[in-house]
Length: 333
Ligand SMILES: [Zn+2]
Ligand SMILES: [Zn+2]
Ligand SMILES: [Zn+2]
Image 1 (cartoon, helix red, strand yellow):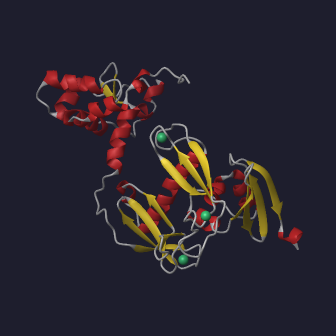
Image 2 (tube, rainbow, N blue to C red):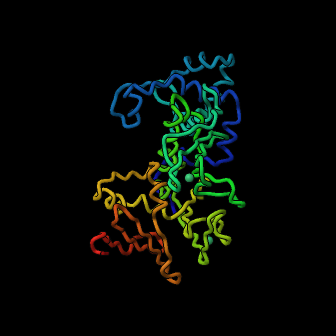
Image 3 (cartoon, protein in one colour):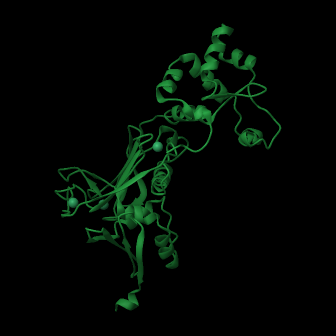
């Protein structure tokens, strides 16, 4: 397939990109252009659309003086290496491209001014399985949330230790936030990425997503440690993979379906504002019943309960809803 678009700056190979950046002076140039960039200036934000006349690029002499390199010829060589992909040259000087900004943002996300290893702390939220308070712990750039009483949703093979969720959060996410705010930020940050995967767009590189289903046909979940075949509590798992940047998301179909507008409407009609990127998604996923109706031409039934009513959804192998039936408590009785 011939790629659409004629942006020559995107034609850099990964080898070349790594080689260009593997130099301290070039990194300092990228960092300096970022430090001199003023995000509150609207001329900067929309500059690529030519809506403002202002050109806020950094002049060669200002860049050279700020980096403090002391060899004009060599400095010019390093700047030329960056120009085209990470740095753009305009009439008045130099500025970062989107790829240049992405490099700086990836580095900044991993840094913090505060202590990066807070102690485990109780959060103002309750376990969807047993209603006990939950505990959050931040380690290795991940937030793990566990129940203070039960083994949660995901157990290790022995079934002894469990968590409710573990999600990555760059140390930057801890800045100026209380533990409760970090807890909510982690859910928003990650579930919005998962929604982007579900919508077919890689949240890391914007590339296409390959979606597949992993169905355990002899599923037999136990209380602890999950099913002996698949080691999960849920029979149907959705895998989202970007082969461009190797980003992956895997999770229960019962969680993925909570991003569907039919489910949000069902909750909304009963007085609940359902937001996918929220803690409620975890609690509500625990109440969704799943069953496999047919395996030849795959049909999966998910039943979402709310206030005594039920939304019965039938999905095919592409996760399209082929049937949606609402059943009120009155109809059943
Ligand atoms: Zn619990
Ligand atoms: Zn990607
Ligand atoms: Zn299984």
